[in-house]
Image 1 (tube, helix red, strand yellow):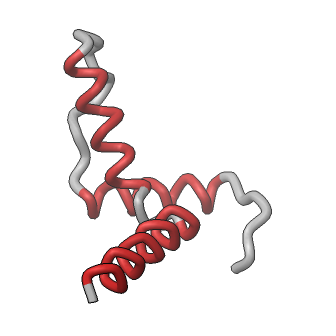
Image 2 (cartoon, rainbow, N blue to C red):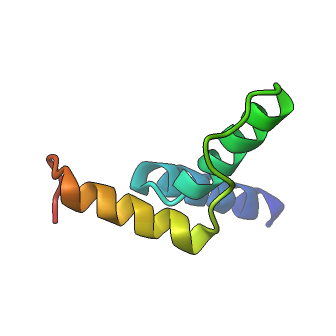
Length: 68
């Protein structure tokens, strides 16, 4: 049973990456890495809601090939 759960978590992790659901997590990790290296971020860390609003706004301003 543990193998099935581990496999399901792996599939979920893969799909989140494929669909872009992990974009906020990557943003936070990048922001923290910049802070740890002494690089000052141009802006404070956005909340998850602010991040997704910014993503949507940028996609609307610069439409690229996407399915919807």
